[in-house]
Image (tube, rainbow, N blue to C red; front, side, top):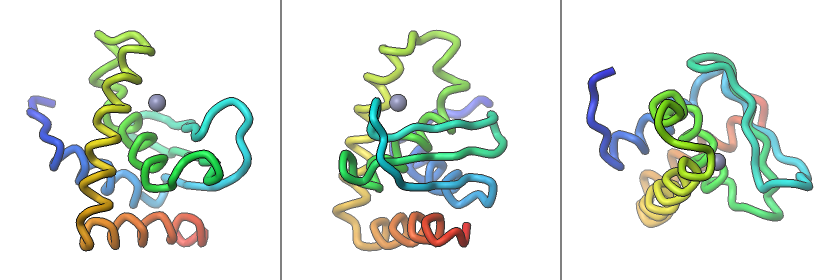
Length: 119
Ligand SMILES: [Zn+2]
């Protein structure tokens, strides 16, 4: 895909991914991480987040960043380098979401629908 990402397009793509019917989100206690993702590229995904450790917007953004960007980053970034990049994008994108009432409402609604099992 010949496409130059911006934070805005990346944020929109992450929300679009989160809204997919085959992308699930659940909350439960996690021992070794704050959130995790199991997925098939461009296919079904299952996000688990521990809300006692991490906010659900941050968790959803981070795991959707993996879903959207892993295929582009994996060829040239090691796991730790990739996490540095994703953590930085997560922080910027989550801050924009939290400070924008429209973005906040869109993300909260998408997350609530997942938690209600309503996709
Ligand atoms: Zn990560």
